[in-house]
Length: 222
Image 1 (cartoon, rainbow, N blue to C red):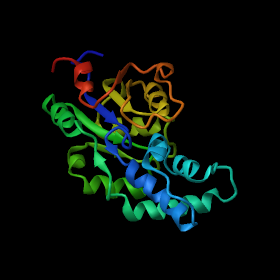
Image 2: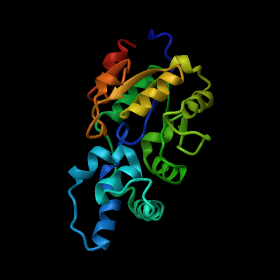
Image 3: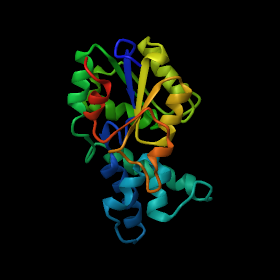
Image 4: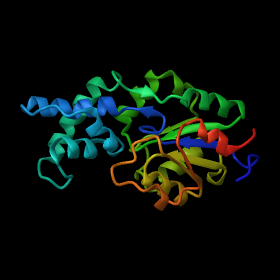
């Protein structure tokens, strides 16, 4: 894609724009403490933060989604997270500068996340960065979540930009799968929550960046 053809950049949220691992991990760890179990360090939770409740409950209790108690424990986790999701969450270093640079290039930008609207809306409304986002699509905005392309196509629709004129940036393989399926160029964010077994060389992203501002280098001159 040439610079002239690019009209918008879409981002995953957790692990790409914001570091929410401290609050996600703390919500699961609260459940351990409430059950008389020892606390786990944030370093145990961080690699799986991108997997949300599934990842956090897997780390905290070895719990699988097919476990009979999973749904009840997931809702408990959600309540814990909802109560504290703005305490430790921060925008990644370099992200504000990246967004400013994209806007200077007259590029639209937006967010496509699998996080439910229940959490996405309070987070993005509370963090000033997102005031200029032209689209914010949550995991339950469309009937499908990533890796299905529907949420990315909805973001492009909201921005009024053809999918082929968009780039999607994310830190999970499902982001790259969804971006490709939507007809977008894709960028893997190596600084995010890649998971313990991730091998980004297998993802077939168009580019890999190790910091938010490295995206500008890949985009080239304005």
